[in-house]
Each structure stands twice: as structure tokens, then as C-alpha cells.
Length: 442
Image (tube, rainbow, N blue to C red):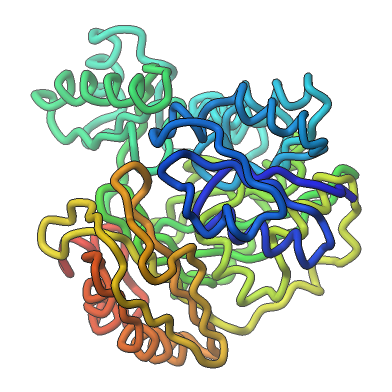
């Protein structure tokens, strides 16, 4: 097992990793930007080092600085969290060349599954259903031709996209070229890669993902599934485990497809296979080769510390439990609490003057917030994740309403009240909602 791990991330996920390491007896090293000098992860780690200015490109995306710190402090492994460098194959390759283990799959797997059009090909080879799609679009003429072949509506996707960026839905031929230009610009800015491909866009679908854990001996365990259909502009807002109103036969087929895909690419550690579900059929969307923000809801149901086992499998520890040992029978819901204006949804900043975190049985708030913390404009607007678990879905919804009503955050505008609207919405309550629910509720 590793004796010291550097966490190449910040905020809530850095805290989550530090806690797992402390429980495992592993020393932790935090890195931080100038804006995060007073951040909680800086205080909680055994060692902390400033690696650059406030903007992510100058600090948390600075590979040279991160690797220099790791070598200097003797860290044998780096945990990338999510976002930042977590799915960057170049960083994974450089870690390997430096004799440092990046806690995740190999850089080769990361590269293959990070190129979404290549991931489609691998999914097809593994027998996983996919929607109709194209190769990388080489020209405007190519885009027009492929859209006519597939049929509108289509969705344009950056090959290296993520976090809701580099995606546009196109419903008419008049929208195609302007949207293509927008996606290419956004992809180049966000991922330094402007390659784009196209898929058939499915209306009124459920977004369901399967959480896997795999060791270096090829053993793959499914830890559960999550419904992530509550999204605004392709950004997830609410997740629940397991996905409601999902046919059990479809669920089992999705689990089998996720396992087959993991075996096909030789996957190790923690990963998520995302699917679109419509009319009793499911289609591969993408594979996230990292820890997911919403891993917490799965932990609450399956009873397995996903971060701990991500670290263990990266160190070569074999999974000692079987599929039948994974817990089930409970229901968990997660609400992402974000700093944003309630009406415009624009990111908000400010100083936290009052903070009360809800408590109780099976209530969890994963965050790096504390009173008097200054929320800056440099990073993602998510402030934390409020998670509840109960024996039933109805019980989980009631528990979430109680937790939201108890949650107090003064000084920074946030979306607590928005989440309460969902907890009282009839479509959400019956579980039979899809990715269009935000248009109705908001």
C-alpha cells in the first residue's frame, strides 16, 4: 500500500480523498493555488504546497509543478480527484515515466476511452449498444452529409468533452454550421482539442450510469447504478441510486454491458459507464475513467468506500468480495449545492457569514465549506453535495426535504430552493422523469 499520496485537486473531492487516506493510515500531500491558500484541504493534509496563481491553468493544471512536488516529497502515487487532470492521458503517462502511480486506469485506457468516437468503436466491439453516429467530422461538408444521413435532431460532441462542455443539440440544417463552430471553439478552449463528432440525439431519455470497480487481475464488480437525468445545460443537478422505474431486465443487461466494456479495455480501479435509456432500450454514451462527483450516493447504498477501493486497486490489491456481497435494497439521493443566482443561474461569489450543515441518520454533506470562507470566481460553482439515504425512495425524498429545509448558507447565493422544487414536483416524485425535467420545473 502507498505510504504517501499527493492529491492533485481541490475543494470537496480533495477533502474526500484526504479522509479516505487518513482512515487507511496514508500520509497526504495537498497542492493549492494562491486563491486557495486558506482552503480546508490545505489545512487537513499532512503537507501542503502552493503550485501557482489562482487560475487553474497556472496551478491545478500545471503538470510540471505537481510532478515536481510529488518527487520532492517522495509521494509514490497521485490521486487526481475528478475534473482537472483526472482524465488527462498525458498527465497519466508523465506520472508513469516519473515512477509515480496515477490512481486510475492506465494512460492507454484513459486515452482510448477519452476519445469518445474511439470509445464508441470499442463499445461496439464489446457488444454494447450505441446510437447511430459519425467519425470525426473533417469539414463543414462532412458535417452536413452526416447530419442528413443520421437524421435530425443530432448532437455534436467534442471528442475530449466533459462536464457539459463541448456539446450542442442541432434540430435543423440551419443550426448545424453555427453550432459546429461553437462546439469547436469551446472544445479548443476547454480541452485543447477541437475534434468533433456527431450522434443521433434521442429525445426524452433517462441518463443512467453504472459504477464499476476493477482490479489488476481482471475482476470487475458492479457497485450499482445511478439516475442522473436531472440536468441543466448538460450539467447534473440531482442523482439517485438506484435509478427509479428501471426495468430489472434492462438493469441486468446494462450491468453486463458495463462489465464487458471494462474487460474489453483492460480497465482497473474505479470507473463509470454512462448510458441513455429510452423505451426499454439502452445505448452507450461514454465512459468516465475517474471518480465521479456522484459516487457518494452509490456508497450510501452499496456500503463500500469507493475512494478507498480505488486506492487499493491502484496499489494492486485484489478485490476480496463478490458481486453477491455488494449491498442493495436502500435508496440514496444527492443534491449538488452550487453558488449561483436563483433566477439567472449565473455563478455567485461572496463570503460565507453563516453556515449550518444538516445532520441526522444517513444524512451526509460532502464539502470544503466553513464559516467566513471566501468563495472566489476562479473555480467550479459546486459548493458541496447533500446526500441522504433511506430504506425506500419515498423515505429518501422526505429525508432530503428535511435536510434541505435545515441547510443554511448565508453570504453566497445558492440553489437550495431550486432543489426543494424538485422534491415537490410530481414527475420527480413518481420517478418517471427524463432529461427534459428541468425545462418543466425551472
